[in-house]
Image 1 (cartoon, rainbow, N blue to C red):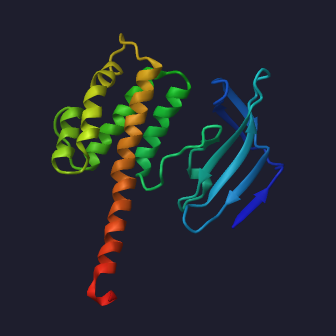
Image 2 (image 1 turned 30 degrees about the horizontal axis):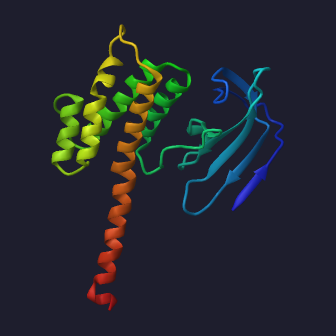
Length: 214
């Protein structure tokens, strides 16, 4: 069930980086729309407008209610970049990835790579790989069957990018930073979304094959 509210009369003014012009902007919330469906956490969408006179692009932010209210969730850009990490991914990892993406949007590419690398390190620790370099930890996840060899190979190719982000005198290109974000998102989706869906699929197949269902 959806609830629409707007225009609003409160003084909710938000600062954000405009996805269209990449400039720091601020806007009063122009209108809200609340989505409340059974298969996802309640979501509040807020319409804003870039404060730059040369841009004025519309922006839609989204906040989700995971039980403590919308105020506890950091607003994410829903439009014009309509992609947020799946709620199945642990909140602390989603937060770190969001910071990495925010740095990328602000053209702080070295900081983006460093935040993405930090998210990868935490992901490894949360999945039992705690020793050695990041590459060693990812290889350990492959050996225990947690991730595929393709992801490990991808990580190996990105290793120099991750190392570059940790040194002040190394430049990180937008392409390198984007590659790092793409890999981090792919790894998180593999671990927490695709594996969960596959486990659910296997459970359904096993239930159908059970003699009690014949």
